[in-house]
Image (cartoon, rainbow, N blue to C red):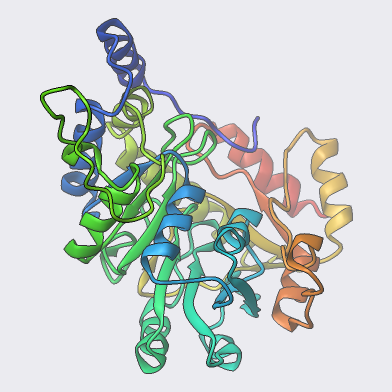
Length: 365
């Protein structure tokens, strides 16, 4: 039994083979087809592939107008890349508290952190559990702030039947090796704004955009670049893996939800476990199944003694020295950090694996 599952479909293997045989390894037809499928089959708005979610976050922050010495509000409950993307611009990460019953940033705590220097809010959907985006957008509108969704965990999640990736001007996904959809490594930005789409498309490839890099008669590119660009595009090898893995994605999401519902039912009355509170409007993607466990160390020892992998996954990032003296008194974060643990929830789990996890947990620790 594994904690994560790296899913590579037979279709993905076939596509990769075709790309390698073609010898066209750069961004090409597979990237375009992958983006097209993400829009048509999953309702994502104007998807643009990247070479990583970190690149996607970095360029989204730049295009959102975040500059050196600006402040960006984000939760500490995330992977360090979220905060690093802010530092890459020279801006200041400002950590707001989370709701310990969701793992997500608390909109009321965002309001407390806003200053005259605040430029943007990053909402991280922990484990695939959507944040309260309506409340976050209302605050952003009130204070004229940009909103960026870090949806690295949230492919397939939705709010009130609207997919994550079709709500905000900037939504960033991860296709890293252990994510639900993998391209080996990769990322995505979705945007509800066509102007932003065109800017992102240009700037993710040196300020030209691959489609706009016009060749002169001499073979050089026309010198029309007027803004800083980056080498953040995805290639066809990566896109072919992603495209192949979309074929059974909806069935795999359904299996994850089914397993999660079994856990919730089995643990709902169990002393020592708190299931994260569901939002009736939100559809969780269940990249993780996180719960709060009393005497977590004992629980970890008990589960590992039965060869069941469990993991904290990520602790709060604000205590890292790279962020300076920023380890703050975040009460909700402290509760979450002391008690959170995730158990396997992926679609490759066998029924007997799920039964073993449930029975082992119910036996106590």
